[in-house]
Image (tube, rainbow, N blue to C red; front, side):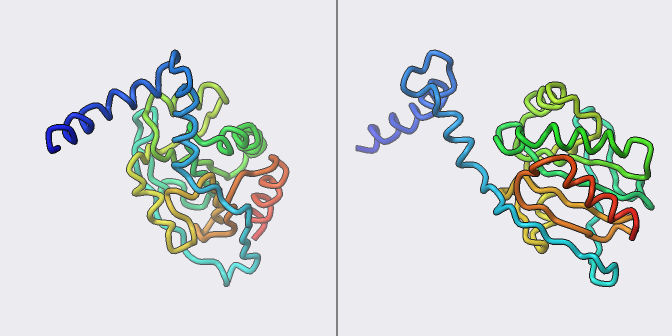
Length: 197
């Protein structure tokens, strides 16, 4: 019985590879099914703290961007930050990518910095995603979810993506979007409010 169990366990990696192959027949869609189970789509709720006195300090985010450069949000003191948690394997993240790119372009000449936090992705998959959607802002590679862990006290977790956080110029949280952004204009309006306050 022990030999049989070891044989079955040894075969598991082969089954996983078969599920990823293009010729997988009935298993061909299994990879997408597995990836859908890897995240909990946000409930679409939005939390906003209009009064600056009600806002709480955002954590300092550091890491290595997908292009290999160091990222530290302290370097962007005085800028409004837009932090988006995403994964190339997450269908709502794919759907909202054009809205984020449009919003980033809208504020190209303003004191606004976008930052992606790529969750549980390989570097190659994440870079391909950025090329596909023409993402020009940096993304921290957060395969282990350590950056995302810093937002657990704010009602987010590494499994709760996509999520977008707007942080004011004093690096206090202005708003949190849990779930896919419907359009660029919604995010643009939030950023403008953060710039004004």
